[in-house]
Image 1: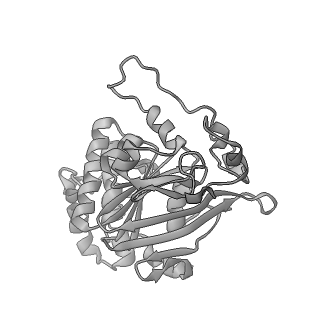
Image 2 (image 1 turned 135 degrees about the horizontal axis):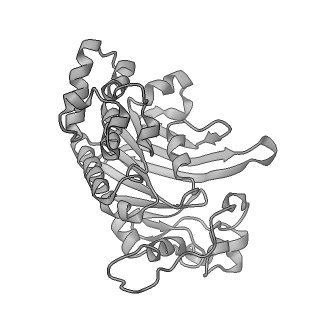
Length: 326
């Protein structure tokens, strides 16, 4: 498979100059054509910051860098802000978490869907209405010509999410970044949105990064999973391998905390403690304060990512020690 996006050594720092802390640390993301990668972790683990760093669209006060950041043969890290503006929405698009906040309340959804086309493809005004209706039809919105004239508040949550997807796909991007696209939706609509993303990925040959805190969502749609904790990747691999044979204690904890009909009257096992303040940890494994298996080495030295099976890596001194014990 062709590598569409190659990002290595991503790092994002926040805070004042005298007390900066890293919220994303040495993260790598490889996206292949026709494949969906899920970035999974708790709130505050650095998932959204990772996605925004791929767009070089970090919030004010945050500073990002990368050892490698390439879109095909283009070195994104070396582009000027003006040139990067031509990439965003054209070759890389993003679906934001809250569609009601992401959409302009005083513009029709049709106007907002073709806005990327006006910016990047110089589409004539006379062609925009037909194009907006066509895109709405592709994402499964009924009576697209009528709904294109409506405003965001007149649509349901599921329809607004479909509008965001239509706008993100308007310019036929190569990369799609989806930040918690199903969080505010009920289970039935979640399934519809996930099927839509999967169908468009296969139809268009997209490379997709799905940001989610929900392992059930990841298991439904993702080809590969990267589990994130404290701003770093603690485990990654093919979805079936990570979910069937989790190696890292954090991944195991996430799976144990997921309710299932197979565990009747069995209490869920929550991960002890909370991730609060984890970014302030300067050495060792960031999960060590919450880990039941932590040893002395975990507190003073961060473990490397080690292959525990083919295409399956984990970062743990106990369950994934480097070969030779070093």
